[in-house]
Length: 257
Length: 257
DNA sequence: AATTTATTCTGTAATTTTTACAGAATAGAG
DNA sequence: CTCTATTCTGTAAAAATTACAGAATAAATT
Image 1 (cartoon, each protein chain N blue to C red):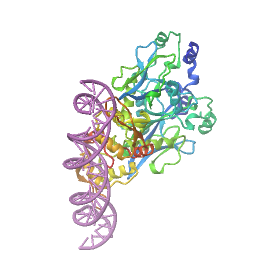
Image 2: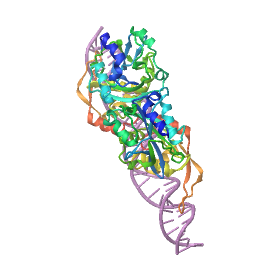
Image 3: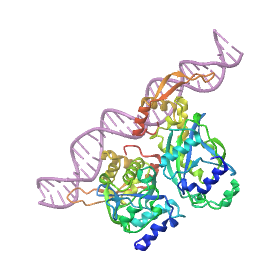
Image 4: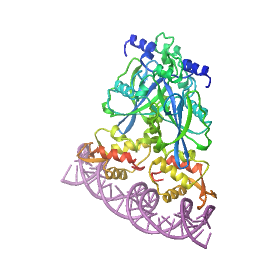
């Protein structure tokens, strides 16, 4: 959606293609350089950042819409993607948007649009391999950036609440979902997986006990391969044992992990 | 909504009052006689049972809609009520309903209604004190019944999927949500809470270890009061210690509980 | 009053899991 | 060869979980 014509058509007639009153909001998590990050977009003409999102086509399964939106935005397919909450209580969600505001922001003359009506937001979160993402912007957005989850700025609409809920869900599900498998590259060091878990849980985990547990459960395998990290001892690389990992998750990994 | 006139108006013009394309579906859990049950409604003119539900008013917070719908149906207020999933993928959710079918069922002549359009279902589950519910039927439903969760019949639409997901969520959250507190009456026997947990988890728990743990965590308190149960030893009654219970839940009760 | 029946109630020991804790090894730069 | 920053690994104490069964008792019956 790049041309002005397309955008105008979307604003005026999008409800013929998409379900009105419902949006999908995506919290896309990536992990890089020992930091858990999410992808935010800068909305053109608005003074702030927000989550990527989109709408459900009238005859499209909801989960397919979520995948499509993610794919269009990041180029990624077949990543971990899960709905986690629907937002329908915040003042923003209750209030209709003002056409005047919209017109001012985007320089169009619109009188009436399905986009100004009350909208519930279905929150999805994605776990992606940071290095594989290539972000597309569109007419409504003119910049993008990965933000450390500990340093998220004030976001548009109720998106701060959405991010916090996504993080809380991630924390709750860490023992039941293959989070490490999806956020880390295929080969990783003990240090990397350890600090990923520390970041998500927001607390320290003794690395000796952590490693012992991972290995004793057979979740990861030490490879015969190391990474050069400058003038220090080279760490071994590890790899997930997918089957053992999934079995362990079914039981629910216990707390200290 | 009882009179034919009201119903006709709802079918024709309900979308002026309610958000179209979105319904709330409630899985109402109660516990009675050592069995976990859910409340189902018999839909008039349709050969089967389904979940209670309703719609969100245009300017009504979503959670308030869920409470209102529960209150209208059961008379209950201030009970545990939580959204757990959004259903938007099943064939039923994708397909529009046929006006002909509807007309046949309800004997009206309707050509076109917001009710026939594609609808996403927001699943909520409620935990209620079985003994306090008094069910209201309405124009669309002519019977109601509590069904043992192990004996749910084939339901209308995708409601079997909704029920299964609610149960799975209950199971996952049993260590993080005050489930016992909401499903049991104020005073209960050890046996009752024990078999409630066995029922939800679908497995046996050694009652000696179970009781030991509950008491050692200070979650329940033994009262100086017993219940007469005929020609057998009279069990003591217990009561939740709400504060200790909530503290324990914050940590997450561990697996054997 | 004793017996019977069905249910409640409780304790200990073995096992497993979790926690706490720090010093030796080493890659490469200087 | 030395230095620095980082990786790597083991053991013992504490806590939690599991396994397991016989004594107590309410009240109906004899």
